[in-house]
Length: 357
Figure 1 (tube, helix red, strand yellow):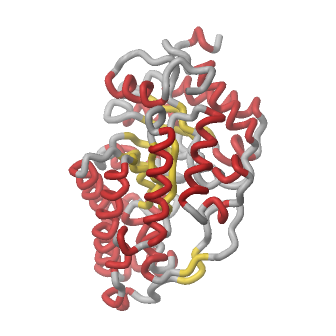
Figure 2: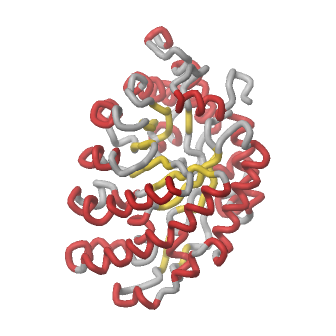
Figure 3: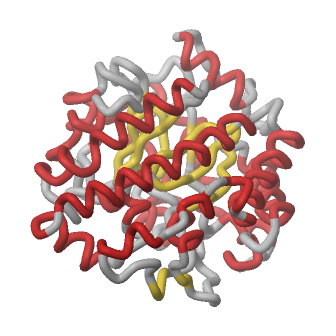
């Protein structure tokens, strides 16, 4: 347990979920892509072994006392299993896809989705092992989650974004067929991580209003998200649902998709999210990852944390302080330190103006 806390993250989470008093607000800087920094590793080295990935999460927790350790299945796992090719050199963030498993929706039936099964995928096995190491070493104090794509975003790892987006209008049947296959492929993967003891960080960046319309979200994304949410609950899991970018037109759709918590990007107006969805489920967000956490100063971080807490601490179903997305690139360690210390200062229970006036 961090020296400046009075509860472990697991004790704090249990109190949050049962409506009991806590020492401070739950605070989750999303430390995944940049996690190698804590051990002096580039992203590629961090992802090279289960031991490396686990060690970085463990060291982050020991230093900062953040309320969630996070391993990484990632956004491209389905596609790379099926033949999509990722870049070999990546130091500051996840690898980019250079080639896609199929060029045309007519090629979909040629893909062997059995390759995506956890027992057939060495990369999935590696991340599962990382989760087991993390849980074995620090799991009594802090929960572990896995960052993983939702079905619509997983589809974008199989065929190029340009072709998929064009097909939303020209070949909707092909899109539905691909997203259906991705949904079915993700079910055993989700189940494996849940059985390992992980929460699901259910990430759907390609469902953003910055990418697709509200109509397309309702047709091609939400039904499959809702199905997967129901599935993971049947498996005994818990999920936090996150969509990057502009989501103001789909706040209510996100909140009724079956997730246990809803995370919003820093482009979202947090007070608006609370007003529209705070009575439906807990809200997470949304300190700016780039302008604040990466490019800002500790003072910028302090101010951003305070504003988020002021905007959302009275959310009816509860609020969890978090960054607006995963942290990529070179993140100053002092900014993560300040994120947590500001959470302890402004988010001390009982939260109220006495903490900042």
